[in-house]
Amino acid sequence: MTVAWDNLPVLSEQYLDFVKLQHALFGVYIWEMMNSLGFDWELLRTLTTASNSPKPQCKIKRLYCQSTSALCARLAYLACRYCALAAILTIIAGYNVTSSSEINCKVWIVCMLTVSFAALTSASALIAIRVIAIWNRSKIVIGLVTSALAIQLGSFIRRLTQANAVWSPINGSCLFLNTQANQANITATFATDSLLLFTMLFGLFKWRDARRRHGIWDLLWRQGLMWLALATIAEVPTVVFVWLNLNLMNVMFFTPELVILAIGATRMYRALWAHDTAAYDLSAISTLEIAPPSPVEVHLNGIRRKCILKYAPS
Image 1 (cartoon, one colour):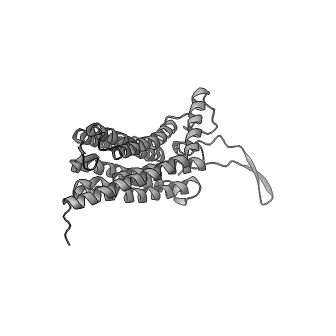
Image 2 (spheres, rainbow, N blue to C red):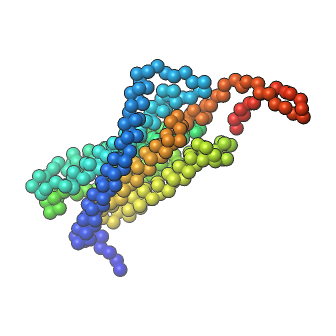
């Protein structure tokens, strides 16, 4: 049976489901925020303490010691969390106004898209920092990652110029217009995340220790595969529906994508932090320098010998 997607009854039913979905996701994200506020507070405290104290001296060369990448990772984590919260609050506010309190829908949609894009970009940035670190800050990889994020930014600016919404007195809320204009931006986001993911997994495969999958490397492998699953579940439905362009409800899966990616990226950050507070600065692994080894006495066939244990990176 063929469905007339543009019929008013179909649109009305989908709109009600859409609004209910936004409220359900709002509850999920508030629960997530409340469960991890303690971690955010500790992260802010470490940022404040680190900025007011001299840089520590490390026997092992770790960029974590007030490194740029470690600081960027923390800021990206906080931006992802709170920009996603701002986006969801903006969405909920737009669907909970009374019919007598009409709002400026153009301003509403621009604000919503801006903070949503900031959250999604921050989630991508958390993965990008890992990729650059795993590849030992390769200039080629840095250029590739920067280009992908720049293309994503360009597609968003283009989308922002085309964004529009109108007030619906019947529904008492704003309705999206020109939803097919999301095609370039949503596709660019999916392509960027896919590129970052496969670059990260390929980079892990090149490391001998990573192939053994023990310690932090095992965690990185598992999180990489987890991100693959999350990106597929969250982004593929959005991309498919936007390109099918069935009706104005093409954006139904945008908020689920935002919530899934924001929760997934920030939870992976916290899991890696719990494993080792210095672990997220993965360049500390790729640029690991072991201090000069000290002689170790061993006994071979009853003969005392002095040996030096050396670290041989692959």
